[in-house]
Length: 288
Image 1 (cartoon, rainbow, N blue to C red):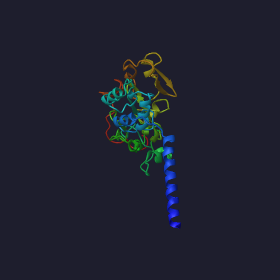
Image 2 (image 1 turned 30 degrees about the vertical axis):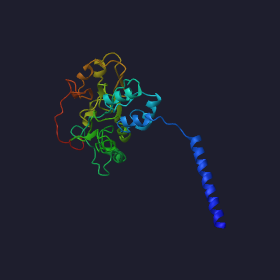
Image 3 (image 1 turned 90 degrees about the horizontal axis):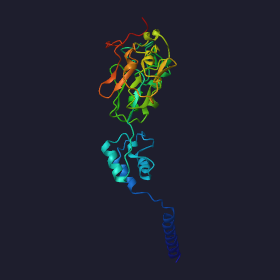
Image 4 (image 1 turned 120 degrees about the horizontal axis):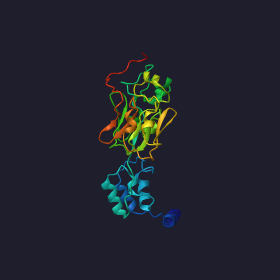
């Protein structure tokens, strides 16, 4: 008899809990638009964060809610963005592609080391040891933290120990910006053609002992640029990208090529007066 009562009690309790779960499911159910799943499958699944959202799923939710347009995803192809717009019945929007840019051209063929760093193969670690051994305290250390941080195979170290960004693969996620202890990377619209590939704050030709392509703060670029396009601040040219860049005039008289014209087809273009660097090997350590 006791066993029967126990079975009935457990059965009753189970039935009660089941009913409560059904009621809770009805009361606490949160509707999710089924289009979110479909839109998520149409996104590139890069989860790079370049759109401003922490991943493709939150971005898909924002698209369905109407908080953002497909064009915000610069990783998707034009066809992919158009397909999402057609599916949701919204315009694609116009969002310019952004890429990572490096503000340094001081590879081992043009920049000296003041000491030989021997330690963990990491820029972060090297920075803690007398700045990493490079004579220019603002320059790239060349140990590839940015390359390791890039999940999209968009950064590779060249033969002179400088990171090269593949703009076609770059998603503008910003991981390289975070990884670089010298703060040499920034995320820029691809239409920003004028670029200062140096962060040296010293003025004068003496800095050329450290790096042959350093900015010497001569100011010629600012003189030759349209009014207010370039101003000199802390011995570096600062470009106002809200002003039409127009042409390559500002780079032509730069003696070191520290200010460049970045072209999607031609690559990094130096001015006609920039000295040609043909050295292939490493510069010797120390000073001469």
